Image (tube, rainbow, N blue to C red; front, side, top):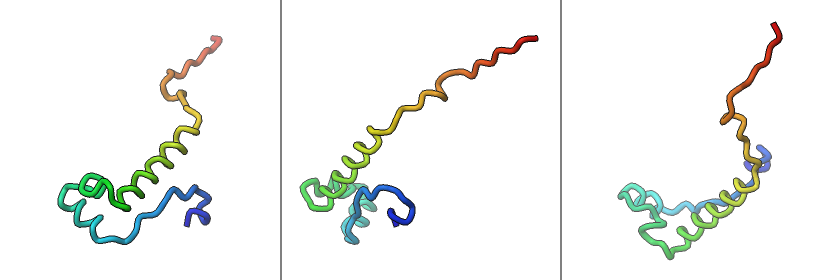
Length: 72
């Protein structure tokens, strides 16, 4: 799907019932089992996402007011 939409593939989580069970109980896998393989996958995806975001140019255009100069 990432190829179809021309976006970077950042990772995939396994179909594991523990993800749903732990999240439903209020303790996501990264908290409930921080040393597990699933937690490692979450951290890897987070690192790849942060790395991609850090490469984007910052756009400050919305922070500045629009200035219009007119000659009357």
